[in-house]
Length: 278
Image (tube, rainbow, N blue to C red):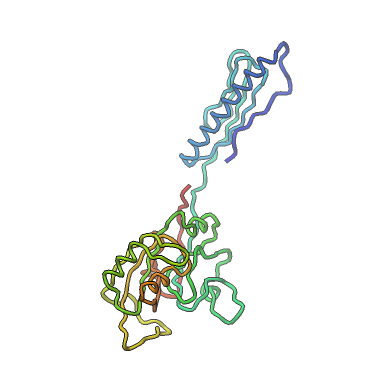
C-alpha cells in the first residue's frame, strides 16, 4: 500500500516568520498521523487507497486537510489557503494462494533433484515454482504441502504459528497408558524437551500394508498410535517413541493444520486455493 506523503510548495507566502513554520510543521505531523490511521483502517477493511497530500508549509492556521476516501479528487479549502489531497481507490485482490496437497509414498525424497538414483518429487509433480512447505523424511509417508507462495511457505513451516501435525505411528511393542501419558506431557530429547502433545492408541491399523513391507520380528508384537504435535524438531516423532522403548516401524502424516490426505490416493496430489491471513 502506498503511504501518504507531504510535498512542500515551492512558493512561500510573504510575511511569514519562523514560529509560523514550526506551527505548520506540527500540523503537518498531525496530518501524517491521520494518514497512518486511515491506512490501518483500510488494511482491516481489505481495501487499498493511495493518498497524496500537498500542503503549503507557510499557510498559517491551515493544518492539513485530507480528502474523503472516495474514488475522486477533491480540493479542501480552509480560510484563505488551500490544501490539495488526491485520493485514488483500488480494491485489493483477494489474498488467495495456491497450495498443493501431496500424499507422499515411502522412499521419496522431498526435493526435486537428487545426486543419485533415488526417487524425488519430480516423478510425481510437474508444476514449476512449487516447493515443499515443511519436511517429511524419505522413510515417512503421507501429507506433504507444497506452494508457489513464499509467504505461505514460511507461515506453514514456521514453528511459531504452531500448526498441529497429526501422525499415525506403528511402533514395535504394545504402547501402554504410561507411554501415552509421557508422550502427552513431553519427552526429554537431546535437543530439549518436547512440548505437550496429543496421543491415543488405535485399535487397528488405519492403513493398508506398505510396499515395501515393514521389518517384522515375529516374537515382538506391534501397535498403532495417533500422535499430534505442534512443533517440528528433526525426526521428532521417531525420537519420541524410541525414547520410551517403542521404535517406530512406520510413520504416516495424516494432516497439517486444516489439511489432510484421508481421501487422497498415495502418489497423487490436489491443488487448492487458500486464504493467507494478514
